[in-house]
Amino acid sequence: MQCSQLSEDDFNRLTLGAQVLEADSYGAKVYLLQDGNILKVFRRKRLLSSALLRPYSQRFIDNAARLAELGIPTLEVISHHKLDIPGKTAVLYRPLPGKTLLQQSREPGFSWEAQLPPLVELIRSLHRSGIYFRSLHLGNVVVTPEHELGLIDVADMRFMRAPLPPRMVRRNVQHLARFISRENLGEQFPLAALEDALLRR
Image (cartoon, rainbow, N blue to C red; front, side, top):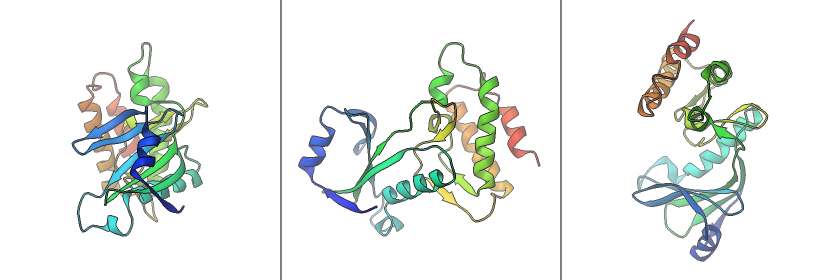
């Protein structure tokens, strides 16, 4: 996908009336636009890095395409842009419809009994396909209207030629466990059952 220039004026027009979904000390990072699409801004973190040759935004686009090829529901990229600020790029995309598992887990009457098996199968399929998703957590797994599980925020991903080795599987599960602890879901989420299913050989 060609990367086109998005001027400051065009950027301001595009984000007019948008809801900021995510921000950091450098400013807004993710905008929910009035038409329902999302604009995600990427910043090169170091002056000299691999992002000079392959920006994080390009990785985001490539990873979404790879997941779609594998039949894993994910976001749909619309366009890729360079911004006027050096080191900044942006991706405009259609979000994956549905709610994240984190959102669903906070709803009355939610039970992990029904959602744990498909979550385990999704993570197994990633590991079998050699996909290491560093940002794997309940806020990045979406339950679609068709009751499938899909992935969002897919920039931080590695695709390997063989299934993940046990040490990388353990590291991935540890990332998820830390997220569950941070979100105070330890009493609800069946972490032991998940670890047993994914780490058992």
